[in-house]
Length: 407
Image (cartoon, rainbow, N blue to C red; front, top):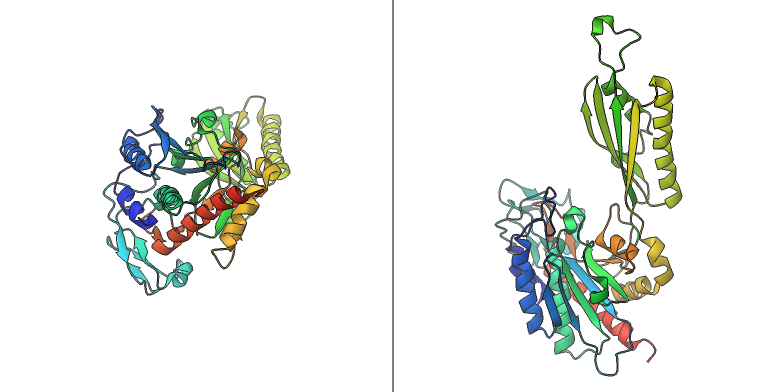
């Protein structure tokens, strides 16, 4: 079975996660796909298949006899789809021999080449889109499909291999996918998340990230008698925003450039709150950004009185390059396999976080590979059958490369 055929099967299963929930999984419907995958894994010769109480699906391919001492490789993808757009009632549309032109979807939407210039490079392929009313779910059901098609190819082509661990996780889209994966039972020396964009991409750098919240306590008095007495918390919130570099926002930055992102501002004269997320790939620049926030807190308390402004900073995740750098063979091997199947290798930093980052800091070095998909999290999402085939070849190439190591 080709990978895209598996994607079509998985895409119609509703698995959207819920960021308001306090359980893992955040939605019970993720078990619907988990149970389907567990049964399919067994038919592919994957052993020790389990679905645990938190909806983590795991299994293992035993090494080829004589290859037991080879590195133990893991492959990971997530089952949930993003809450940003409906994932219920997905109706994939297949366009054979795509002509490279604009694509009219349902619901008054069109995927245009002006908005998505890469479409012209997909001419002649079998394109899979939504019907315009939901997302597609290739993020990350394409990754699941590619990993299982890799397992099927290994079995059918008798590809020698070391031990291979497979995991499909819940709740990645709401930031919880890596938290409860039992790494000891998973048993890999290193792993790859298959959860990126184009098939020729590899990602092993991501933002250092923190959330920052300023709580402001003002003094409310009648505005007619306010001189020298009123401290307007809402105005101080605006002042905090004005004290940050105006160019260092998501709207003005790209690549490895960091930013402060104002996510929420609420309040009145007596009390206000202003929230930011802070991001930077460079650890030193990241720490400098946090120091700037602390300085703002100090300056405003000196200006308006102690206790007027209280800053809380919560670190969210770190740049996985710190943990990948000592194991760069993982990246180099993947790049070689991508280069063998694609005209160029795209090595780009993630302007966000990944399960791979969290897993890397838990002790499992884990860069991210592309799935062949585009425009995730919305109705313009699309992917090609041929791109997915390429990813399967890349995954099989990685398996072969480590099996041949030292032989």
